[in-house]
Length: 91
Figure 1 (tube, rainbow, N blue to C red):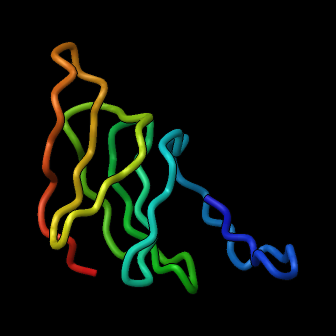
Figure 2 (cartoon, rainbow, N blue to C red):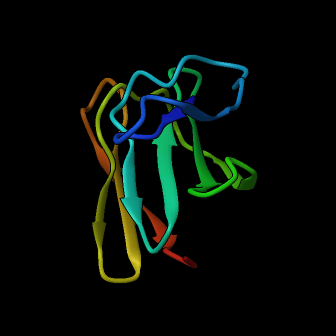
């Protein structure tokens, strides 16, 4: 996962994740949320890239994150196509 300064093009931080983050990143309250194909949701500090938390999902994901108030909602690659609410957005 890489953060690039939109004004200068400078790489602000570059954090390797153990699986590809195929879903689009979402930013809320200075926290970057992304999912990996392996099936984990990551929350990263937007300023530093530090991992704030990682939580497993029921399956991998290549979908963007959605935030609704205190909730992060993810679509996972399950046979039923189920969506899962992963919990409160602590950001």
